[in-house]
Image (cartoon, rainbow, N blue to C red; front, side, top):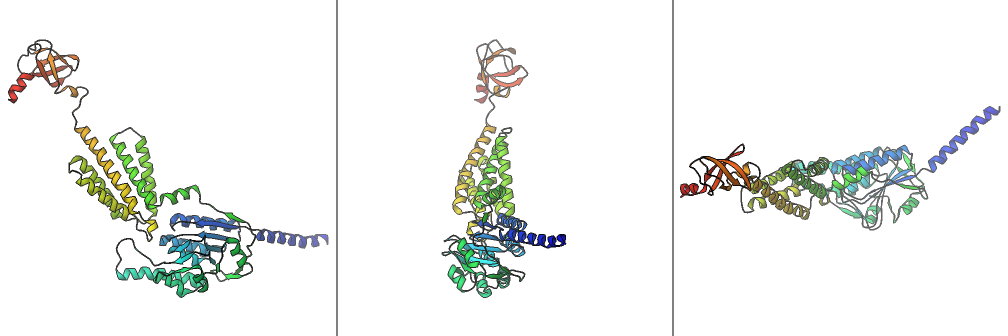
Length: 435
């Protein structure tokens, strides 16, 4: 009988311990304060997976973004929708925004909130240079609008107004978004947001109702890994362009000074880093071609004197290639004009200068070894009839006159080096022939 009574007691104790563990689960906080790109999607995905593994109560994504890449945005939305842990997207601090791609992520969240002094919207798809034909533009716009309708409808938010952020590029303040049911809360702080949420249920993407009580719960910060921080830094197109050109310059130095090792090593590392970043960014291959042609013009300047015209052309192409390199939807993910000019002009001048030095060095007369003796003037120490001794470069050499006998003391010109014997002509004879 005692055993029978003990089993229910143990079951109750286990249930109480389980409930205590669930109630004490943490809230995981991540911060997105940059453009939306592949590294952002990886960071959010890793955080959601960790929160699910730890059975956290919720994940808070504090966001401040001008927008970003469509594919990365879709990937983030898919991960938020599939998350077993409720996701709260909070636009904060004051002055922040959920622009373009940011409002898609905001509307996809289980709970959408904004701090006072923030805004969200302006999500119309754009292109970098030029405009696609009307049919293609309609396809892009309709696709983005359908995505917005899908996430907003499932979360019970204002579908028509959310769609207007895509089709009409509308942007909303935090109070406008709250009044028109684009978001759920306006809160000046995270803890205030948690207090407002206490006891209020919301529907998840699968239709289940959930109630969270997060006030006073511990909040853990989740940071990017070192790899993600480095990738996030080098995926700034301005940094990528600088890394690419530094790598190219280092490789050029290595090719002209074989065995230097250090420039070649640095060049390879920088080129690989730039290639990795460009692989993740939406690049234009025509822009890469322009950069390669710019290098060709710098090389041509060193070989064909054009009084700087080829260098100027190379700088123009390098600048345009840099500006067109990344086909991003927002200015924050494009190469700035100031960066392109600040990199292209010095790079063009330095490259043309170094190549000019290298070409001139190759054309310059050799002044060392046997080849360095050819064309030198010396003095006949003995009568050359035809063999004898001559004094050249501070050294005494065996010599043979190739034409007429040369008296001792006469100047001679070295024509050829044959082993340890010089073949020479008298300087006077040379002058007579030339006259």
